[in-house]
Image (tube, rainbow, N blue to C red; front, side, top):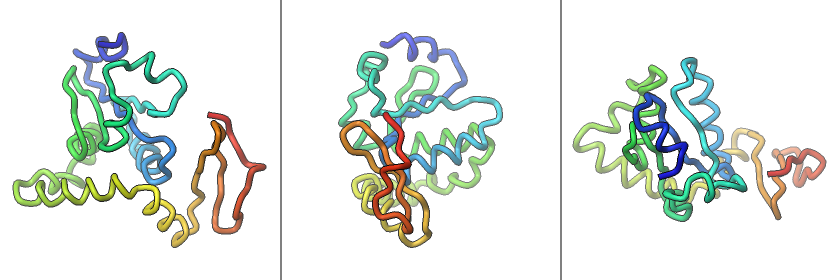
Amino acid sequence: MSEVLQQQVNSEQLIIFYDGKCPLCSLEMQKLKRHDSHNKINLIDLHQADFKTNFPDINVDKALAILHGTFQGKRLLGLDVTHRAWTLVGKGWLVAPLQWPVIKQLSHLCYLVLAKYRYPISSFIAKCFGIKANYCEQGTCYVKSNNQSNDKDNHRSQ
């Protein structure tokens, strides 16, 4: 177990391993952190350069397929991560129905579809609402919006 995960075992902090190249995923993480006034959530981008060194216990391919998190030394997956995160920031009531018995099974299936198609869904949402979206190419991320077909002047290195 990595040192970061070992320190977190007795902590009330949730670590979320998310896809930082996914605009929709990044947007949700930003919104989540805005509500995290007590710093109960630690966001870790799966694409950071030293990820495998710092978190050898997390399989990147599996974590890209379904959201991974850890809380008090236990692994959480998918909507269980989402539910725990929003509960920790005092907004659990927003996602509580996702845990109800019949709805949980359906919401889990919907989540798996959303996770699988998150890039085209992100693109569609960005186009519909004019939201700036990131895209990455050879280690550099660019910002583009509906008004900018390919804005390589607004870029940041990963």
